[in-house]
Amino acid sequence: MTKEGIYIKMFSHNDLDGVASPVILRQLLTMKRGDLTFYPPTFSSTGKEGTIDDDIIVFLNSDKAKLTDEVYIMDLTPSEEVLNLLDRKSEEYGFKWQVFDHHATAVWSMGKYPSNVHNYQNMGDHEHSATSITTVFVEYATPIELMKIEKFRKIGQLAEVVRLYDTWEWFNSASELAIQAKKLNDLFYLYPPSQRFNLLSIVASAGVDEILNKNRNFIYAVEEREAEYIESKIKNSNIIRFAEYDIAVVYAEQYISNLGNAMCRELDVDFSIVLHGSNGRQLSLRSVLNIDVSKVAKEYFNGGGHEHAAGGKATDEFIRAVYSL
Image (cartoon, rainbow, N blue to C red; front, side, top):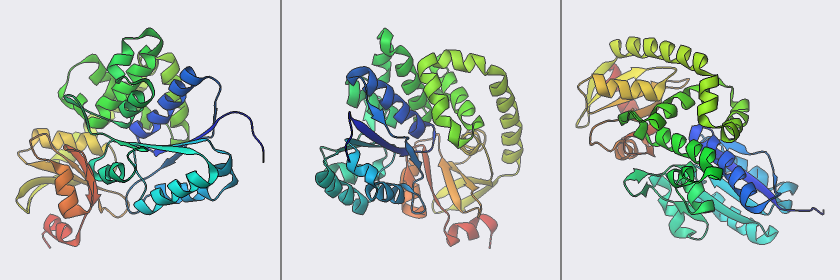
């Protein structure tokens, strides 16, 4: 097989930060290096039931891998076994690979592959997201720094707005960027998964301000519906004692993150847990106090995440505590 030019394959998570990162990487690399060929990105889920390992294995066993020059994995990290396979295949086929991940649970991968894995949690007083690691990798600049350069202003604003939402820094801020972070996430989930990459590609080109203004009526309708839903769920939540914590717990099917934060704000608890998923066993943990729920998730729920936002899976012991069994 023969080919011309540079071919790039991207894998990423399927949330806002995960979908925005390939958009930003594609635009920055194109601006920096000219004509490149990007295969359609693959968006994967994480965790023990996630698809990232399988997605990468399928790619590595395909003819496409033999024609690829660069592989980027963003906002998640494959298992050690798959990273080892990726490294072996890169030597066999001749492609380069990089991982951009800001989750503390994947720090181990940077120790094993320091030249390939970029796993950073903090940049000064702020937390990293996959979008900010991407801008630092390509342009050696944070999103805020890019916003000060006219040709990068729109892409920098997208990266920063997404970072604010993903790290939940927007929640305790009244800045214009923080307000935009919440609105962009609302708009993102109005679209079906198959259209979200295209949506954020348009945002990167047109600008966050223009797209949010154009869709303001749709976003307002979502905000009203969300407020009503959250209010009803808080009224039906329970406060339980589990381990050494007072926890607000409720089952919900939508607005998981915002519901969890609202419960923390309005109820006298250490943190909140929203049960969700088809079997009600998936957990979303949120805190606004000085409690690191990523550590709680790791210790009790085989999960992980950020200091104030984490996830895991409910144990039988926890389910008994919730339902007083």
